[in-house]
Length: 504
RNA sequence: GGAGCCAUAGCCAAGUGGUAAGGCAAUGGUCUGCAAAACCAUCAUUCCCCGGUUCAAAUCCGGGUGGCUCCUCCA
Image (cartoon, rainbow, N blue to C red; front, side, top):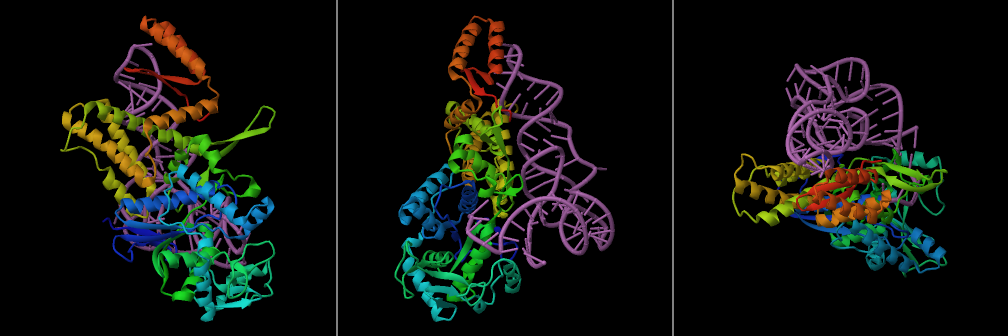
């Protein structure tokens, strides 16, 4: 197994990764609170950790991947009340939507997907433990974690309680039923119209942070290997999880390794509803295809903030009529290169047959990918290796000069397999090339408003002209099609066409 | 006010002490009836600025400048 180094947010550096059990990884990632359709920010985080999970699997680890669904929460209750829908039903509906959307981006289903609503007993048990050992206290039907009892508080976010107190004084004063400003709710007393469960403290529901502590304990144990989530969750969510779990099970427990992914920004500014730059998963998938977003994500390192170029499209009178996802369109063009290459390799292999076992030349893609991923999941470096491998394959496909015939055949076939194997480690290149290319053309036809019937009529006319060696007429038709934004691809098997895509 | 992150070519983006991966775009070439695709070649004496440490710095240290995030719901 490749020795692995991962960045740890707690130690603030790359460190050797040593799982509790050799060869196995227990990993917990904070999942969504489903109260509205998933947006691109959800997708980015899900893709980042799915990539980490895939990479660890590729490196030979047996990964148990737990990603929760927070289906009991203020925002859900609010949305349900507004819609006149049962909050659990609403959460279940959006959770299904979320999973369907993530699948479009190649995100695998978690090994376990626990929900708050099915872990109430474990949550109450954990809160009781904290109350019993003096880490938490009841106040008017609420239960709060007493932050003063947990000395290491702030270690992950690098803030002291004094610093936080200074920040808090600017805005909000101490709530009257809490001992201290930093204390946070483990259990909230039910208000009218809210879902509730019976507890030793009366009817109520869990606070925001406690579910992750209960779920990690239930599914991965007191101590586990990796805890992940978006950078924004470091404070207070992850900080509070640490306090709860270590308050209950001891300060040497909980996550051995913290991983946080960078944020998605738009023109250097974070995404937020008030700025109007929140884009839905469906909108993205329709515009550029789900794999383009995936490809765009793995082109960047998971810890880097990632900037996303979006351009508003306006009609001649200035009315906004849509948006163009420039960065994703570029990623889709890049992706097309790989699928065109795979298609050519597939055709070659189908035609040339399998050359069997034996030597190959320049097939170190898998080794390079392992080395890159073992260094804190350096997916951009893997992308570079993928490009080199695809270039090599294209070179061999174009000409086999000076190379043993069998070696050439074996190498091309091996490169095809390796591109897919390494692609799988990043969650890309798993589709059928023909399907991808067909769908991509469909998207471009829609985006550029190409008249397909007209293109096909001109194509037929040109084929007839070329059959009689009337090249002048054929070239005239080519020119006409170019004017329509269509490129022709003459091959020995006939003429195919594609929509010209030059970022305009 | 407190905590932290980022700055690498026209653009995107790796690289955290040993002399700048990869991609897009661009230019020239090969191939092609002409094209497209593909391939080949060229493309950062230099990594925001100013000091310092070192035989050696994009990488470490100090000081600036610019951008961003968290401390409030946020992925």
